[in-house]
Length: 213
Image (cartoon, rainbow, N blue to C red; front, side, top):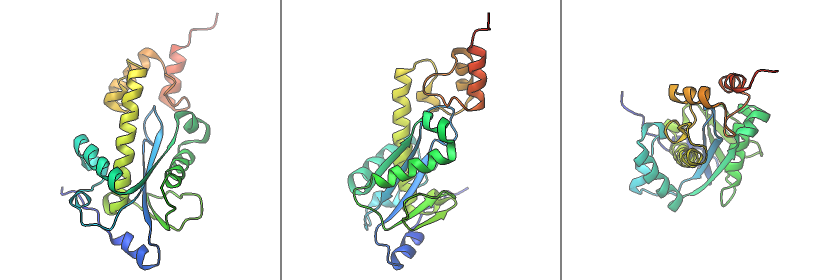
């Protein structure tokens, strides 16, 4: 199946409506058992640069391609990152934590955007005009860029967690519920990076807890 090539249709429609600084917004890390949820926001330059034509949904790119494109985005676009830690996910729930991360990403831009294109059905607080686009990371070039910077930043963070919390394999699975991760969680019990309210983590915590005397 041929991968979709994201375009400028939604961005241009918003620009014709008077919104000259349109930011794409996307998140990564909703599903893992460990680590934060991270969001990216990107306002792309009006340019025919070759790297812009290579932007895709981050899931369609190799790690090497993502790293190269993230570097280009950081060098040539206005971009911001926002995070909600595993503890915030436990406190607020994943939906509210995702929206918080997105709001923080938008706030981290160098200048406020006039409008947002948000992947999926999420709503970003703050009153900025916005359009939700299901599959926006595959359809909208600015959302694809946001997905890339968020994915690369989260992968780097999970690699650092792997060094700080060895044995779980965070550098390999990035906190997702792979068989290897579940096995490590079952053997070692939850770490401080795990989402303590999620069912597999709670079950592992109960197993690791010594029986009452």
